[in-house]
Image 1 (cartoon, rainbow, N blue to C red):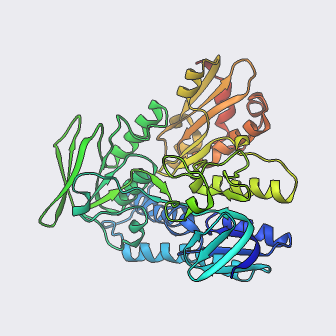
Image 2 (cartoon, helix red, strand yellow):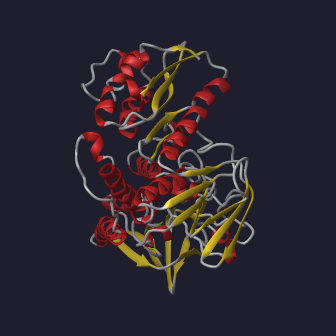
Image 3 (spheres, rainbow, N blue to C red):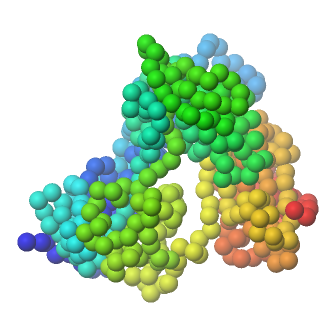
Length: 458
């Protein structure tokens, strides 16, 4: 016997709880299912805890630099990792508790804890309970990939999730993967005091970025003493006493890296393999992502997929936007679409990277007649005043339409400043709107109009 609902929401990441509130507020009888931690990746093992730890690492870094600002900080810097973890746990925990308590108090909503599995296109089991609904929304997120590399099962290794349990300082952290997760943890633990080596299979870090961005990121990390190994082939692992060994044939350096801990940061995979999607007839691609249309409907009418599990974004902000798209279409007769959004994200090393739209390489490949403007952070007064002059900003516009095609701001405040560019892109307004705007001095954003006034053909 099944308990009937108007809607079932599986997962409590960034899309699920908001959608449950919207549906329940519209008078629907809603069930929401969570098998482990309320709040999903962002709250528990992603954005909130990692950025909290990055803040602690930044504090340690600035204490070491205090003399540059005329401040005496006698003695060596000591980072108490147990207190770092306790602060992270408290902030993350507050968010998790807030999500759970909000759902449990929500009128017209019933919370189930357990693993949801499809029994059919309209029925889901949670333990011994069976739930039925005409509308089912999947928001189950993703997890770290553990690659099938030689010896990986023979050595202890960490992922972004298990890194959250660390309350000690690794002597030498070896990170496999030179993209967002690996770089953020790498700089963070270097600032805490660990020796750090990053091993990347590709020819450069964060390969989805332009080459000049990748090169600048490498320069920033190496300036802090992080070892970078690129073009790594035949990566394998072994143990030697208390040490873990990473074998990697690289362009430069020894074929072995001796360390104490290994972090695997080589990608994510959707949590769709144990949902019984085959019983519902839901189609997934070769990587396990649920195939959806422009309004996030799966191959089965009445079933939607939101967040990391649909392969349409992989960020907290895209997951939340998925909720907005589904809610707009279902509840407000507002035909919003995934294709309406512009790609944007941040890389939270210090200084951060804020990205929006197309890269320079993508614009060149498209064959468009375009203009490009650049400016080093050494020529941004705000950055000079803060003593944070690493990085640069650049913007690419269509020479014919004056529409902004993309931008990258690698520098202090870049993750915030990029939004004034992004908003004009959404408005489909010409770049002259920003160029003629009067921005506050002294800020990073005030130099964007200057940069736009100095563009050259791409």
